[in-house]
Image 1 (cartoon, rainbow, N blue to C red):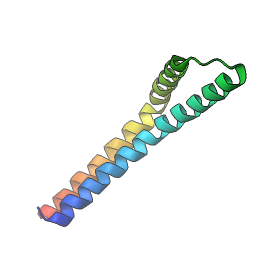
Image 2 (cartoon, helix red, strand yellow):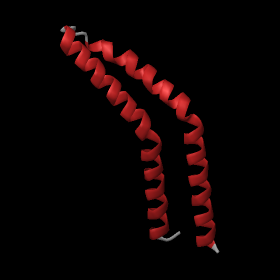
Image 3 (cartoon, rainbow, N blue to C red):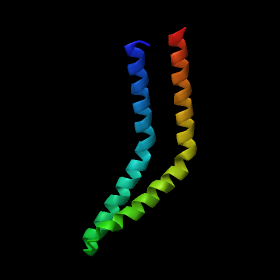
Length: 89
């Protein structure tokens, strides 16, 4: 396998990972920001208060977006396999 093929496949895998993880990370960041603002307003300085809502929001986001994530993953993996097949021929 040539270096360019390997680098292209690696780049595609990393981009796919970023695309699939972005919604969960953004939702968790927004929930953490809202909880932090709530803590600042109410002067509650409990550091463990942000963990449970962020975990719940991340899990709910994954449950809601799972069909889209699975379709995106399967289509990109099929594209990568087709790319490898054309490079082998």
